[in-house]
Length: 401
Ligand SMILES: [Fe+2]
Image 1 (cartoon, protein in one colour):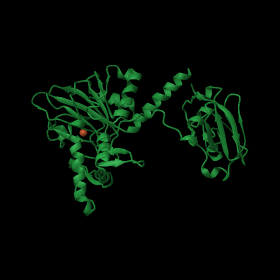
Image 2 (spheres, helix red, strand yellow):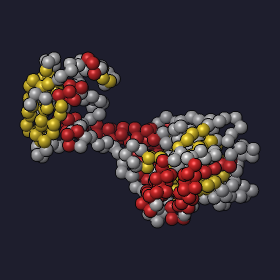
Image 3 (tube, rainbow, N blue to C red):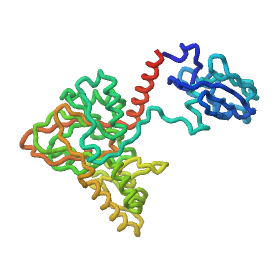
Image 4 (cartoon, rainbow, N blue to C red):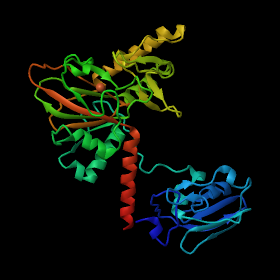
């Protein structure tokens, strides 16, 4: 239901649906801060300037797009609260000074954006589960036979990718176009110089070990790019070979274990950039990044550990030996069976995995025995996250009906 159609709700600065069990029981202001008392005893505080910026009305927002219409310079320098009242429908009415601007706020929206008590959490965020093979011996798997028409299974599949970094569909159509159809259902496919949709099969003279029957060491794809693809789809169209088992490794689990067991090696691996360089005859992609990339909070954000696409190391002179020793520690873990999930691809199997978290590879196979054909493509993590938020939004909207 569109919020505009619900007479008991005021507009909010987005298109989401907000519901909470708690209600506002008291409203007061000291002229600068609005204070709300809630039915569960919580006390929430909001600055006048914060409220004024979020007044969802035509003077503040373009209501068609919910983009903000006012620049910070369009508002008075000192904004205060003249009056505040709790309306009979549970919304909160505020009159601001010196404008005399009136606004109404949805109580549930205020509750879920209560920055005085820790701020808003992303209610579609999925807790990450780091795994060893003992903890996760095979990919979380889902029935793929009706996946494009089964919204609940589709959401469960995406949720597993968000938590474990990988998930498998079994029994999908062994159709060369299926990888594209499935990926398009998630979001926008990322094009690249290997093609928007690409094949992994033996192709002599193709210039990449991926297109042979050789073993492929664990790696992430396109680490030579400024922005590594966040997600990778691999769909098995055909496999009549023996061997060639897929391997997948939770790079975040390896990184966190290194952080705990070898903190100095971890520090070097997360701070000293390697030179990453593709070696193609017709393109020249390069990037510099540590083998393990942290985000601003210190959490592991991505793995850039792909030794076979490294150019000459250009590190501070005194760090070269210690960094190389740390890199051996990292690669010893990446080769350790306790981290290495191994499984066979059957026709109709589709893997979706976080290409910046999960390293993938394969064992060698005998190309004389038969054919092994995977179709793949990339997307960004944000496509998965958006799809999960939209699923959560639809669920909440369904609750309203
Ligand atoms: Fe790959």
